[in-house]
Image 1 (cartoon, helix red, strand yellow):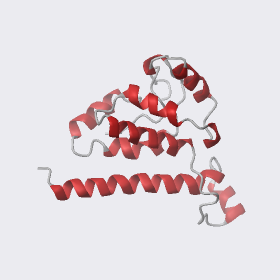
Image 2 (image 1 turned 120 degrees about the vertical axis):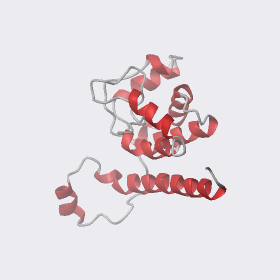
Image 3 (image 1 turned 45 degrees about the vertical axis):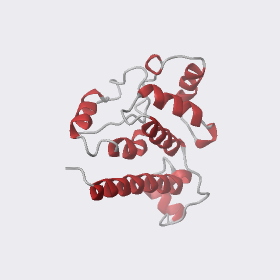
Length: 167
């Protein structure tokens, strides 16, 4: 049974996961792709935010959250619109996303654009998408069956940060 207390708890967890993702992304931005050894040699323990600028991963997470506010049913067309509206190249997007954004800007449908990228940004975008299904396990499981399972299994049009629940 869904109660007011449960809703409050779920909202709190959702906000916490999004905020934690944002802070971790901003802290790790300047060392993205570095090994632990490289970070340790240069900084010791990384315990500061640096410039405090988040990356494309958080920007796409924000787009997913905005899309969920507009339509809790998780409409890929709305997500694509939000990704395009929020696209700021200085955030550090991978090279392939520029072609996708150009196609979307020219009016291509979300399911007609795509790439064979596995999209590591999916890890950052998953907290809001995973959280949106916290009260409905059946929807969460349904998405797990259609989400890509390997780098060679990316349907055209699936943005990298699509939810990939591993059930």
